[in-house]
Image (cartoon, rainbow, N blue to C red; front, side, top):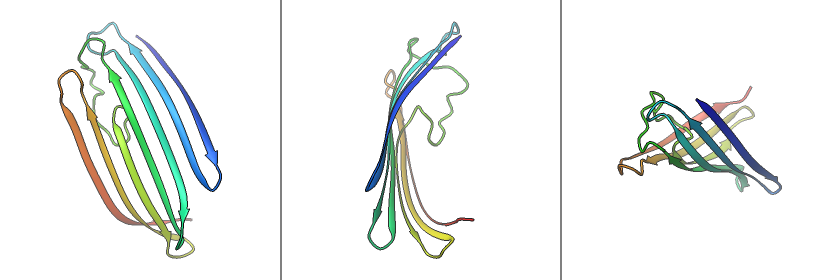
Length: 133
């Protein structure tokens, strides 16, 4: 088996922060159903808002190609933030004390297998506190 991973990225820091990236991964296997090619575009942004709020956003789009028209590897588990998924996450953060932040979050994860039309979609929302040491 051979594996190749290449990527490029750009980060801007100014009145807001923005990071853009592209990655390509190729795994060629002599085992049927274990070869893949993946393209992934990603973006991360953060901006300060009035009332001491900070908005953080992350997104990624992935295109997966399976040369054998099927993927049989045991590593096909769909995990949060896996490179095989399309993702969008938003977080709104506000400090409530010197060491504690209140967070409101939303995330959507999905993927589609182009050869058979199967898809996966999940949404997660939350409210929480973050402690900073």
